[in-house]
Length: 601
Image 1 (tube, rainbow, N blue to C red):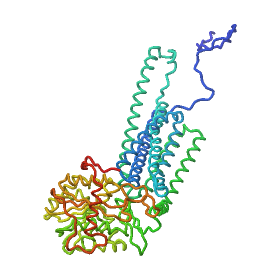
Image 2 (tube, one colour):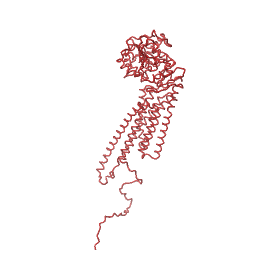
Image 3 (cartoon, rainbow, N blue to C red):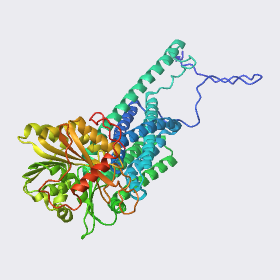
Image 4 (tube, one colour):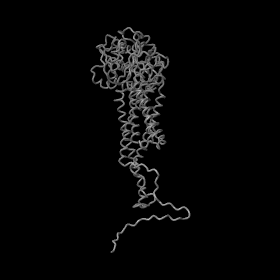
């Protein structure tokens, strides 16, 4: 019987290695580490990383622009001259962003923990910047250097964000796309992979990586710019009206640290060691605790800072939609009115200012009077002392000032209840825009126009001292009308004063300069400290005025026959005031226009 045969597969018999002299060559086999590496992320996980990163870039960009606008707004409020403050903050911050991008190179090897620390530092510094700036203004009296320091620090941290996020995204994309060379590609040995294919793979890989990097940069900058748009709109329309400057910055910092810390601790948690993770958690919790504590205590801080600035006798402090309004003084003494930290009305000597501003312009027909500014009601008080006045129109930008002048007992007593007089009509509008349409709407012209505005060096009021504005005033004046202008200090700021004079003459007016002395007339544009009690940073010693009429013949200075009895002004005093002002006249100056404002410093 023949046994059936079955063909068996050949068995592989391991032969013992031949012993040779010397060290035998090692077979070419792929080397493996003793510790198996983590499996690479899939392409889907790399895409999943991109969207949270872009969302955080959006949030951080919005927060960064809020910090920037916060510094500009608060510096303009505390120091003045918003054009200068915006230029300083923006230029320093953009320069610092370039420095931060260079410094971020040192953190690329630890991009995850570096980004987490950068966001925590940015949230702390940016969130507390408004508090620090206001504290420097209140207790040190100097805030310019603090603005520069915070602009530099915030700019450096913002500049480090994008490079670190680029490193994180590229690392995630590289792990997800399996960008490592295929097996055997390096030596040209492998199943189905020849030397030519390996070379083509090596040529194609850099091009693909460049395309991916370019797309990543485009996505990051798109999210960054859109976030900046949202932050820029949220600051004036949401944060300032609802939270104010101090609380708004603190809340922005909290949002910043939550977004940045959450991204690193969740999305990039595999890139963190246990020690780095613990450090980031501790730092983020500490920053949140500091911001939360400051938010709780912000009202007490603001009250203490306000007492340091205005003294202990703060009676009323309100934030209108446009500015901070503070009234100081005791129950028996006259009040002082501060607008955005600048002394606007000194109750003890305001009569010197308002008598000199109003009464020379009333020497002539004065049936219809227009007051530009004057929301405190004090210029209207002087005008209403003339029995021949039939109507007074007050054009005031801030309704909150008029409301306070009506309701506060001290201010209402000081202005003799001027706003309760039926002859007074208040228009809440920008004076420039209102006058542009007034010439066509009004059937009658005004006999007297009084410009009761802050100093022309304060930037928001600069356009109301322009040649174009004075031309609008000329359109609403009668042929024999008079225009009285407060033009700043004659002795302390003669360049500004005579620029107003040149601007009026360029608009077709003939002018007569004069001044009035006072105990504390106020402060020039942009004081560092609104302190009238310490004897430091005192204001100028006089007020400067200009009386203007249409045409080429300067008006005569005098008082109307029906002028009431005045406490500080007479015909002799006016003539002496005109001589004092003329002594400061210098070389001819060019006029100030909207496109070329010439009031500075």
